[in-house]
Amino acid sequence: MKHLTGPSVKRLSTTRWSARYEACNSMNQNWKEVVAALSEIDERDRSKTGSEAKGLKIKLTSLETAIMFAVWSPILERFDKVSEAIQKVGIGIDEVVLYYESLVDYILGLRDQFDRFEERAKISSGFEKYRSEERRATTRTVPADETRVGHTALSGRENFRVGVYLVIIDYLIRKLNQRKNCYKGFAAKFSFLLKLQSISSEELGVAVTNLISSFPQDLDEKLHDECLHFKSYLAQLEQPPKTLHEMSTFIRSDKSLVQVFPYIDITIRMFLCTFATNCSAERSFSALKRILSYLRSSMSQERLNSLAVLCIEAELLKKLNFEAVLQQFAEKKARRKPLLV
Image (cartoon, rainbow, N blue to C red; front, side, top):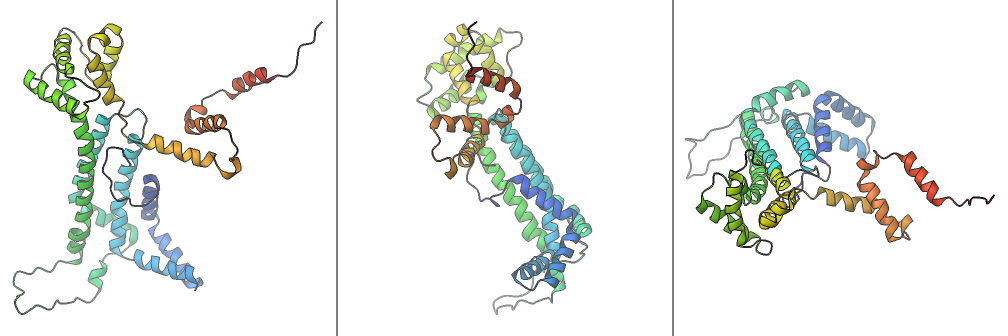
């Protein structure tokens, strides 16, 4: 989930969220079969492949690893669904904020769900004890200036829950809040437009001044007077617009309203036209890399642009009637000339 306004965070890998979820989900459902396959490879192959299989089997034969797969599978599924929703072309920033807030609440609710994940891991893997409990207990040497009074030795379960599980949950919440606050801070600058009928003149002045200071080249001090006028205008309507999209449609449906409230129209369009993600642009560059290969090095710019549009708009291309297009192309490119009678 890479966004223009979101802060940079460490990526788990270069694969898509869907690939990560499918890998975790498949592992949870076929844990014993995967371990059995690795054991067979380890027994039959003594080369590098067998050594790698043995190393993977050692990592998988532990309750800790099974719990990690059980934890990440539902989390990655939620991230994958939200990622698909955020990548839609027509999504607005206010909708992105709602998705992030829902994700934060979902992850926060998982803090008390460790028992559920532990039980699920025990069923899928067949392990009952933590690896740390199977090892011989070690005693830390106490320095001369310390005592063992007040020291608490955590069990293998509590050590994993506190040192791994809760750390993951808290890290995800912190990173999601950072991204949410970036989107929320931008959307808050325009939120006063939805409260014109209830906001006071003093609060309106502060909100407009803050917005103008953020976009001094696009907005003017006249926006304050237009907002006061537009506030009175909305009070006269029986059914005033409730969202910014409805407000934009209402203003642009009448040219006279655009002339009366030009800066309000500009402000609303600035918010609605701000991209929530850069996924569409990245797909365009990815399409160009696939089209402009070394086998097509002599392609003209016009043909490259046409092929790029066809590749980028593949979903719309599937809805076209190719028979009609071919018929129209054949009629334009026909070289036969009618015979004179």
